[in-house]
Image 1 (cartoon, helix red, strand yellow):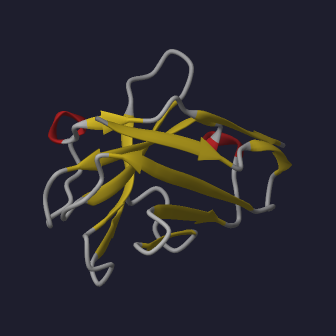
Image 2 (cartoon, one colour; image 1 turned 60 degrees about the vertical axis):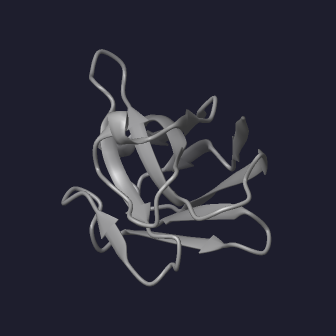
Length: 124
């Protein structure tokens, strides 16, 4: 089993920044990729960003490209999501997810483990 714990969410004004963290623990030996997804009230969960094991390849939803940056520190088993120029439409619960593969993906059913989520609220 792999446990994921997100942190760093909160309330921020439009144009502000937040940095989310996701720490992995448990049976994490091996190659894995990580992703961030979000779910707003009344909407389906959507892909935000993902990163391969090496950290050399990153992927973003069009809605966050140029504003969000994903990174990882494999020594700390932690992945980060730096969110800048936040907009009210970024308001959602953000989830990190773990995939037993070198290659990341943008579909939620590709991922094996999920965190409990952290709330991000952007006020206008």
